[in-house]
Image 1 (cartoon, rainbow, N blue to C red):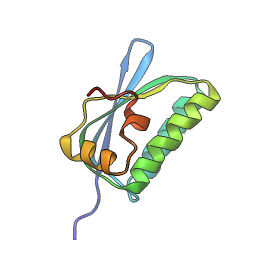
Image 2: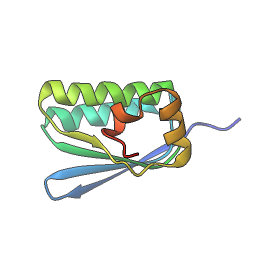
Image 3: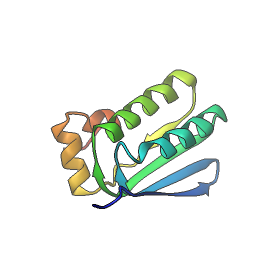
Length: 108
């Protein structure tokens, strides 16, 4: 049995913080990301999330992204999820009917 794995690479890009997620975004791995997003949001930081390295996402990961985007809008800090994601994750977001909610306007 494998242990779910998520690595968060954090870099600064000018006034923004970029979080590149690598691995699985699921129930076992969302706590660390959720805690970091809360810290960054409390500091009013502009945050970009890069899901291009995510190989799996489940409903817990989707829920965390949706709630974090909602919280950012409500609390006045910027959070954006990059459009560049793996085909597998994009398919899951489409099946869950949340692709445009998480990624914003999705072209064609």
